Each structure stands twice: as C-alpha cells, then as structure tokens.
Length: 269
Image 1: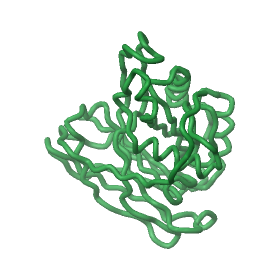
Image 2: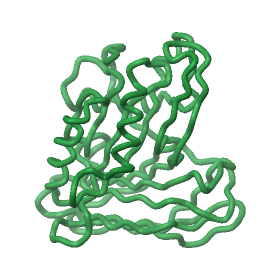
Image 3: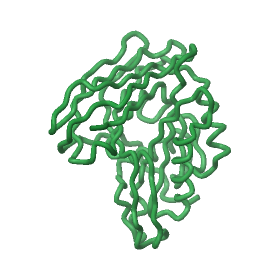
Image 4: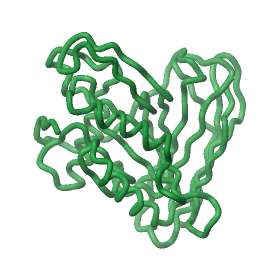
C-alpha cells in the first residue's frame, strides 16, 4: 500500500464530453434488481490506481479477475479503474490519470474518515474501502453490498451516426428504505481495456493491463423515492474505438456516498 498526501478539500467532479464517434448501439441493457428476485443485484467496484505505483499491478489484476469471474452468486459486478494523478511526479506520467479522480478519491477518504489517500484502494458501492489487492476483503465487501436493495437502472440506444450517439437512460425511483435525500445520477464513459509499456518510474520495464478505465464522469441529474429519472443523453467520445467503450450509470448519495443503483452497457459497431 502506498500512502500519499493528506486530504485538503472535498471537491465535486464535472468533465465535459468532446469529440466524435462511429455508429454505436448499446450491446445490452442492464436493469438493477430491487432485491425481489430475478435480476442480479448490481454492485459497483471502484479501484483507485496508478501506473506510477509499484503496489498497484496486483490490484489491477484482481479487478480484471473479479469482472471476468463474477465470483458472488446473485451479484452483477460493475467495475471501474480510476487512475489518480498524484504519482505522476516520480518518473512516469500515467496516460489514463486525471486530477478529477484524485479529487473523487479524496472525497471518499473524507467520507470514510481517513487521514490520507493511498493506492491501490478499492471502494465497493461507496460503503466499504480497503487495500485494492486484498481479494478476501473484496469478496466480503461484495457479498455485503449485494444484500442491499437497489434502484433500477436501464441504458438503451436511442439514435446515432458517425459523429455521436444518443443513449436513453432511466433510473429509479429510489427504494423507500434508502430514500433519505435525492441521489445524483452520474454517467461514466470507460475503456473496456487498456495497456501500457511503462519505461520509467516504479514500474519501469513492465507491461501493465487495465480493465474499465474511466475516461469521463459527469452528473446528469437526480432521482428520489417519488420520481424516476429519464433522459436522452448525447455522447461524443473523442474519436475513440467504439468497440473498446462502455457506459456506466451510477445512482449515488451526494457525490461519494452509498451507491443506490448502477448499470452498464457496451458499445459495438
């Protein structure tokens, strides 16, 4: 585990979309179960990581393994790799890093009462945090998160051309058991997989592989126990390969509170 700077502030996240895409359609629609049976319960697993951190590759590998194996019965794992930027000054600048994700991690650290941020850190459903390479803790947290009622989330393709795609997103309403305040609805764009040849820093000479690498995260609305969220969202994806992209929708208390719903869909030609 690698420790870094102490927390100084709790900051919100907002990243605009720019660019163009090929023709896209949603590969599938995932609806979060309300816990009444049938659909698996979605659980969000976030990994705060860095290519400049020598402790992180085992956690990156664990996240890939969790998504591939889906180890907990009745749970649909939705994963995100969030690359922080505070290791960029020790020899290797992580090409997937963003200060926005460092801020998101700092907000989680404040939420959990931690005195500093560290990598690798895994956060499950905004409820549990632990060292990101700890597979036993990961499975325990996923099992615990899978017992919670979730708001339904669906993602479907609405329209598109060679410049952009429009997706239709529905979320909520929130289950009455968790509806204390309105929750935010967040849209994330992530690469399905990425790879780097690291030439400097703590991981010099290594080939690092990542899954579900977060590239953009924005708040697109709110939802509560009385009304669902429904909206068409135009997505411009900066000329990336559509076969390597996914959308993740997160329903979350405040900015980094409990995850109350989640869903994802892949883009394909």
